Length: 74
Image (cartoon, rainbow, N blue to C red; front, side, top):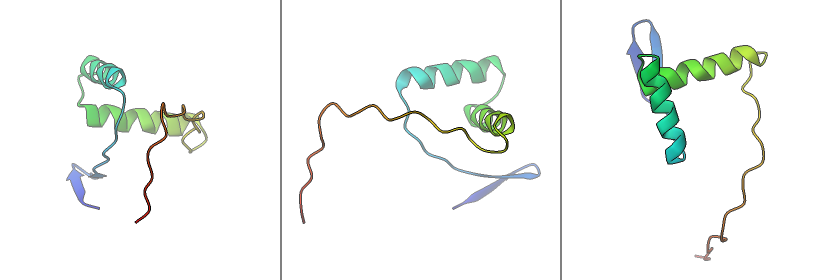
């Protein structure tokens, strides 16, 4: 894990996949906050942790995939 120093805060890269419409909303919210997407997500997660007794809240069940993925034995 590569750490990068931003001022007095060390950060690491988090690569995730999200739905396009969610990315548009995050980008719009970051722009409205005059912040980068990275900073916006960092602060959003920090707010969630602060609001939930120091933990991230659990999420609901995943939606089932449309089709099962093929699994082959090797």
